[in-house]
Amino acid sequence: MNITFFTPMLKLSGGNIVMFKYAQALAEFGHNITVIAPHSEVIDKTENGVHIRTFKKFPNKYFEHIFFQLIYLNKFFDLTSESDIIIPIFFPLAIHAIYCKKRGKTKKVISLFQDYKEMYWFGRYIFFILGLKFINSNIDKFIAVSTPIGNLIEKSIHRNVVIIPNGVEHKYFYPRNFKKENYILFVGSSAKNKGLNCFLDAFNLIKKYFPNLKAKIVSQNNENIIDKDIEVINVQNDRKKLGEIYSKAIVYVSQSYGDSFGLPPLEAMACGTAVILTDTDGAKEYAVNNKNSIIVPIKSVTATTDAIFELLTNETKRKSFEKEGIITAKKYQWEPAFKRFNEEVTSINGKNK
Image (cartoon, rainbow, N blue to C red; front, side, top):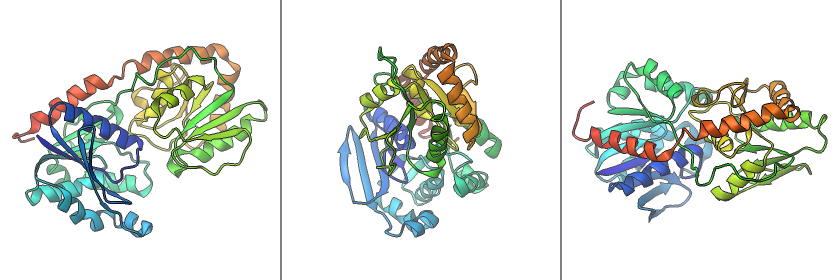
């Protein structure tokens, strides 16, 4: 089968990591896979069995952000060869996929839903268009990456949603016999929805009680943070190195405003590190408060600081979270997800929803 993924960017964000995992798995199952995205430069190449095609991004970032769907509608169409299935991984791109369907470029559209309501105004917009009959009636199947997000979609569209939770790359993320080092860890960019400022505020407060405590921030961006106690690390997609950083951290802290799943906290659990994370829908897929993690309110610096203090001073609880987190993470494997995803994709070919 010819299968095409639509993505709004090629940057290796959480959503794109999931997309490329599925794209490469489908290629190994024998399908012809193409990924199409806007990019700073035009690319036409094949990597790991996946054909990547891009078109030039619109130069004005503000205009691009507001009029994304309009200015790129024909761009996606022009680069799309005849496909059996188009899979948009960002829901607004479902409109581009439906456009291709109506003009004969594809037979079916499957939404790989990885969005969430907390995405600023985009979240409200996404769930608005999700409820439009014309949109959801032209999507042949919905696949959600977590049970909570799947349940939210079902309430909006009144249709069954296939739920295939994400997996953990256990060859990189596993417990190591490293001695814990005296730092707390944050993984993510300075984008507002990742909550980096909340993490920094909490770190500054907890330092009053633990003056020797350090912080590490793993980001693909060169975050401009000048503080002798904070180290910013760009692992350049080195998953093994990231696993080692997770393993050595005494506590992992997520401050995300919203997640459809939230891979980094689960990766930290897999590495045997106690986790603090925010009360997002996606995190509820695997996080259980006071069993394998501490769940704090979104944007609550005070609650986050208190949670860090508790785990730094209560070794018994921290060790319990480390153990329970490893058990939790083992439940999330990629291989069964790949098999199920392939079954769901191939079963739709030639059939009505």
